[in-house]
Amino acid sequence: ASAPITLLMVAVATWFSAPVGVFLGIFVASSLLLWFMSHRQTAASIPASLPGAVLPPALLARVKRHMRLTAFTVTLGFLAGSEIEVVFLKMYASEDSAGQFKVAYQLAMGAALLVPGVFGAVLLPMMASALKQGAEVAAQRFVASTRYLALLAAPLVAFGVVFATAIVGVLYGTAYAPAAPVFAACLVAGSLLTITQGGSSLLISADRQGSILAMVSIMAVLKIVLDAVLVIHYGLLGATIAYLVVSFLHMSVVMVLAIRASRAMPDWWLLGRITLAAAVGAAVAYPLLHHLAPLAAVIGGGLVVCACYLPLTLLFNCWSRGDIEHLRALHGRLGSRRIGLLDKVLERAHRRAHA
Image 1 (cartoon, rainbow, N blue to C red):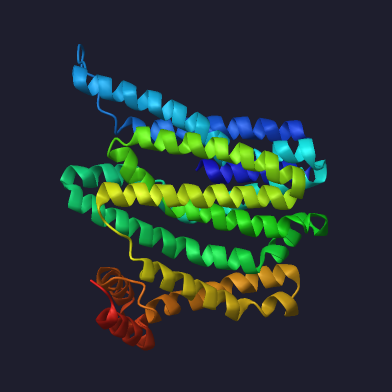
Image 2 (cartoon, rainbow, N blue to C red):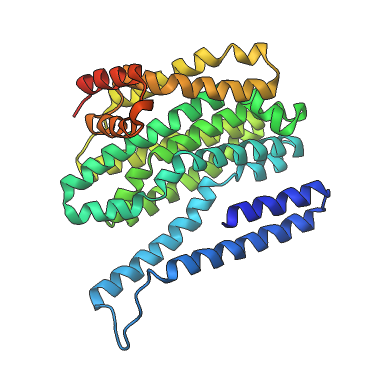
């Protein structure tokens, strides 16, 4: 309910060309509205507190330790994950390059968190529940969540990389054309980090906050050093390289730690097939970039990538038998409106699918 109201307020303010202060007020009002709606909807699910109830000393100590580590991790993670490159670009490059990076980063992170990030946000309680059922269940959920996040992120990355110039042009105009390759790079990096959320959730649930804090601390220092060196010499390109390098290292370390903790290995060949399916879909859509106007290319390209991606993932055996059984059940609900060709495709994919 809060999202449509916020969108309506922004649309009205934009229509009347409101100053920046009005948009700041809308942000504050929408935040308070979201808090109120969330509090109201969750109040019924929270049990009443019992007078005199206290946590066991061991559990209380664990909670305090977790909160301390989380506070440090979030603080350093903000430094390592935020667009601190903007500060170095302002200091050693130009205001224009700082603005280009800011636009590219915010757009890429918004896209990465909106698509695969929605699924990744619920992984922490899921992983904690899995660990209670046993290490083997948690390991299976880590592998499966990594696959699902990759399936969600791959078409977004392929579409964003191929149509980056058109997307930035439509949203911000030709003046921000230099932000297009930066947007593509940030989208790749942000999606890689999102794909590792299954591993991060596993580590947090397994009380590996100390390892996470050490990793985040190292990445924060490395990011500052790389930014200071590369931005001075290469400007906007240096900032982009620094962000890519740190993001890739962050992803790699999280995956290594999660694999060690779970003793389970993601199916790298499967992840490669997912990437191939997205790349082929983007290649089919690529000609639209040169034959249509930017807005039409963005809309048409997105539709073509999505239309090609799902059948390609079935062709390349990217789904498990359980996934396809669920798809067949959903398709079966259409009754007489079922598509015969799709039935045959799903049946064949089910025979070829891995367990």
